[in-house]
Length: 162
Image 1 (spheres, one colour):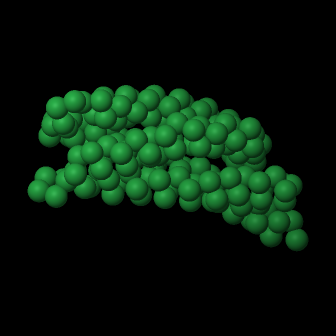
Image 2 (tube, one colour; image 1 turned 90 degrees about the vertical axis):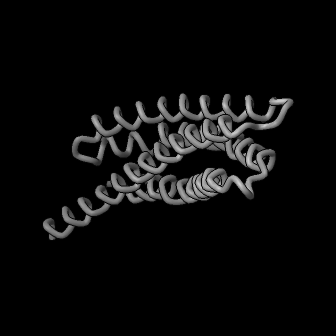
């Protein structure tokens, strides 16, 4: 295993996933805010969700493209069962894009309501946001675990070679 390849893969996973985790945390916090009907400022919630959606529509899409160019070939080459894993990760990327679009559509619908945001719309925002959050969380965990397993296998191979 080439050290530069491994470090590039690890960098993508750790650094970019930290940024994603920050946005996912903001998404989770915003979704949780909806649970407090007495203190919810619906317009503030929508604005926060719109900002989060914009991040996922731009920065996160670029992150997934970088993963597909750098991380996925690394996993295919060095992880046992890597081809199958990468096929699954590519499917998850497509699902993430679909869920992000559904979430974005819901956010835009809420933002355009002239008579204010109803509890039903807030519940929809919650449902779409929660689905996206869970999908992103599982996906990031799978990728991180795969890179760490590659590192562990590399160390095991080096130890038995000595």
